[in-house]
Image (tube, rainbow, N blue to C red; front, side, top):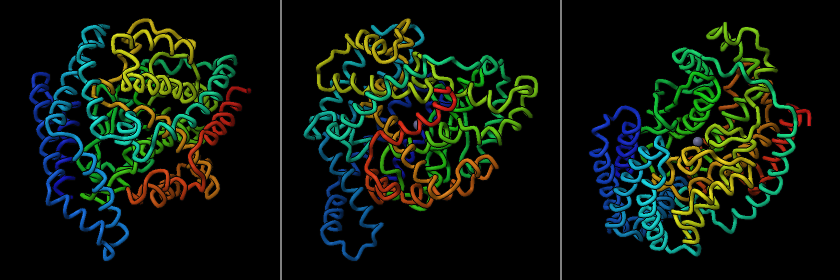
Length: 484
Ligand code: ZN
C-alpha cells in the first residue's frame, strides 16, 4: 500500500511540475514519464500476491482496527477497478490524454476546435472502452465512480434536476435586479502585490507554508507529493477579480483539507472520500467564507494596506457587493457562485451524451452554444470561450464536472450544521479561523476515507444529500445583497 501511495506521489509531483516549471520542449518526454508511472502503478496494483493479501484481510480481518479495515476496503475497491481495465488500455489512455492535452493547448488560443476534435474523439472512444471494461449498470456511472465513489446517475439526476428547476428562475430574478458597481476590481493591480496579499491571507487563515507552497500555472490547482508538501497554484491578472484572490482561496480550501489528512500518510485512506467532498472545502473557503461580509470586515484593511490607492476609499459593503456580482458569462472558472452550477449542468449533460454515444464530438460546439443560450441566456462568441475553455475533457476527465456542483451542495449542508455549533460570522469577522478550521478538521479532514462521502455527510449533517441547503444559502445571501 505504501509503495502504491509513493508511486501516486511521484505521479503527482511530476504532474505538478509539468504544469509549473517543465520546459516547453520537455513536455513530450513528461507525457512518456507520466504514462510509465501510471503503467508501473497499475502493474503493482493488479499483482496477484497483493490481491490475495487483500482478499485474505477482508475475509479474515477481525483482528484489524477500524481504520485498518477501511484501508483494506478502499484498497480492494481501487484494485478491483484496476483489475478490470487491460494494461494496454491503461497505457493507450495515458498517452492519448497527453496527446489530446497538447492539441487542446494549441487549439484554445487559436480558436481551432477542428484541430482538437480528432484527438478528443479518440480519447472519448478509449474512455468508452474503459467504462465498458468496468461493467457498471450505467456506462457513465463507471466514470463518475472514479471521482465520486458510490455516486450514480440514478442518484444524481433527481438532485440536479431539482437544483436546475429552482436555480434557473432564481438566476433570472437576480439578473433582473440592478447590478452592483464593480469597476474598482479591474485595477490594474500590481501582480506582485496581489501575490503578497494572498500569502498574508492564506497564512492568517491557517495554510501551513512549512508543509506547502504556492506557484503559478495556467489553470490553478492543488497537488503535490504528500500531505506535508501541498502544492497550490494560482494565476494572476491585472484585475483583482477575476484574478488570483478567489482562485487562491479556493485552492487553499483544497490545501487545508490535504494538510488535515496528514494522519493517514502513505495509506489508502489518506485521501478525501470523494472529489465532491474535497470541493466542498474549496467552495466553503472561497464562497461561503471568502465572499462574506465578515471576512472582508477583517481583511479589507489588510488589502487596503497593500493597495492604498486602489482600495483606499472602498467600504466593506461596496467590496462585498462587487465580489458577489452575478452575471451571464461564458467562462466557468470566472462565473459567480449562482450561475456556476448551470455551467456544470451543461457539461454533465453533454459528457453523459458523449459517453453514451448519443452525441458526436463534431456536434459538440453547436450543442454547447444551444445549451448556454437556454440555461444562461448567453451565446459564446467562439469556441475558445465555449467548448474549448476547460482542459478536463482533453485530460480524459469525464465524470469529474458534477463533483464541482456536489461540492457546492455539500458545502451548504456543512455550513448549516456548523452554524449550529459556532458563530461562524463572529469568528471570521474577528479573524479567528482556528475554531472554524478545528471544526472541519475534527469532523471532515481528520476522517480521511474511513467512510464513503455520503455516509460521512449524513454523520456530519444528519441528512442525506439534496439541493435544499444550497438554495436556502443562495436565497438568504443574495436576497440581502440584491434586495430581492
Ligand atoms: Zn476545486
